[in-house]
Image 1: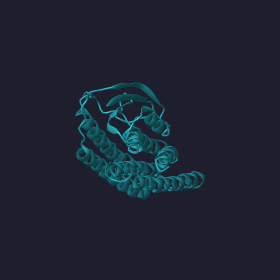
Image 2: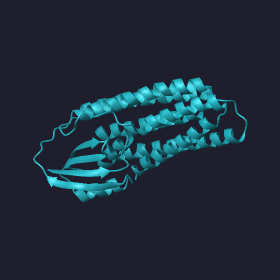
Image 3: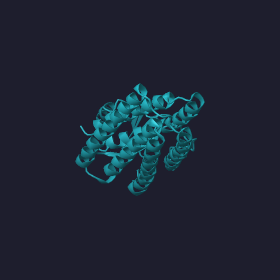
Image 4: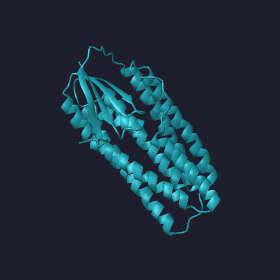
Length: 263
């Protein structure tokens, strides 16, 4: 058994963690993956080739670097049931808020909420694909990753076109109170997801209890809340359109990462 440690600079939220899990599920001999998102460290216990693992990580373009690789006598026990239960929990939370934010975003005419809902949907896809990776075949996982990636890109492009249309033409102001209230609840939901993920990690032998890290999702929620405040203050829909275009861009970026898993 070998213990290998990678520094992955762009791994800062559960989405990147699950993309790595899916990518490495293709490699035989990996017994356990331990993630430290706060320090952006990935520790692997494996019997497979280190170069093969490094090449797979490199394809995700997350700026990885090998820190160490050494023999170890550590005994690994697998817990796929608890992993699946955790993934189902965060998937359900994210998908529920996709529906809530999409519907309230359309009603309140807020592109920020619509965009954030697609970010929630993107996370749901990633957790769903991770569940397939835990119990399904590699071929099935890759096929669904392909469909999910293209579906996300299509929705994000439609959203960007709508932002441009609203920017060029007259559109009623979004309902700032709905933007703020729904985003606060989404912020709480993301906090719960991150707490559950962090709690799971604290049970690993090498992990210490740590504060919940600040993720991209939470930053986006705060961005929509700020946009809602600015909409009310400036009496302009521009802040809502700006946060919308930023989040749609992030959704497209995440979709391309998922598409890499289908190759």
